[in-house]
Image 1 (tube, one colour):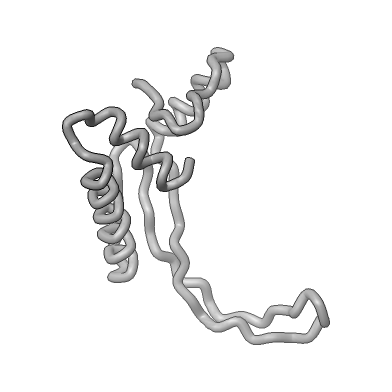
Image 2 (cartoon, rainbow, N blue to C red; image 1 turned 120 degrees about the vertical axis):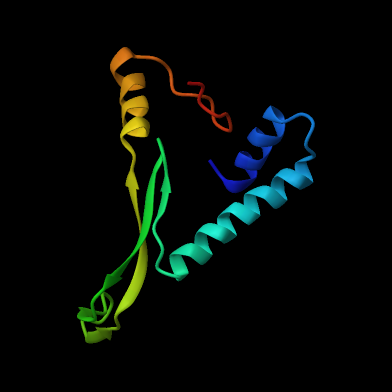
Length: 109
């Protein structure tokens, strides 16, 4: 699902909110999450999962084209851990043979 598909799906569910307002809401949520990870805060969305920013140590890598040794600096990278409820909901669909939700739609509980 792309960001535009998410906006469309939410706008369809919320008929009294304009698509432009939904776009502003989605952008605000993503910006707040990005800002929190930048501040090294943990984001936890119950039933969905959690996001953290992990530090990857500096290391020596190799240029795949030339094989030359290159120095890769220390950096922070976002990391997502899936929540128990989401994991169970995804696995239930496979186990019961139920079809996956159509692209661009939100799964129903």
